[in-house]
Length: 253
Image (cartoon, rainbow, N blue to C red):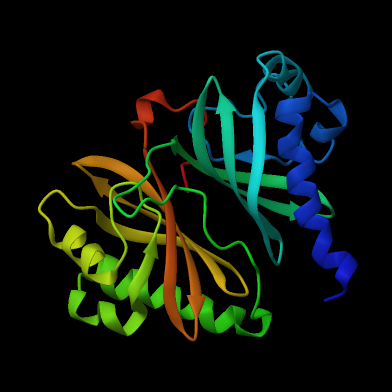
């Protein structure tokens, strides 16, 4: 794992997404459009070509701000703020082959907050450390989602989550107790399936499917772990459009 290789996908995802802001045609060259698989149901497969799309979008003066950017094998993923007339929070995930992006997933919601503890959806720790614990942290987060969020074994929550959890969900205050109360509530989120777990060091991103307020939704949860436990949490929740409205047939996940 040489330093050059580690930096490459992290740089590529930023170059690609910055093209939305700049309209730079070279940004679109990061994508292999012949192979590109689009998982945003609102976006046409191939559509008008990314170079033309970026040129069109840039005329609206969007702003793309990277808060956290990670690499995991063939994947790069980012935690971003978008200003497209209104502020939005996004997780962007790309899979790369031979230095080109070939597959894309995302989860975007309007910026909200601050939450009851005064925290925003994007602030908090950004330092990537504990690279030697990547796989252990991935496993911990995977088991937490499967056992506690999907399996509803809420008594196991303290095994995974620090009591003084730092919470960035716009509806919740800090603390594991508040998280448990939200999961127990009749109108709380319902996790049905875990699709993907991406990790780098002390950060793990889990891509899940379920329901929020009775609406079929995608949950992207970013966890920061320390000493084998979840100590900080960010998320985005997005309603999944019914299949009849999809502009491609690749599925959200």
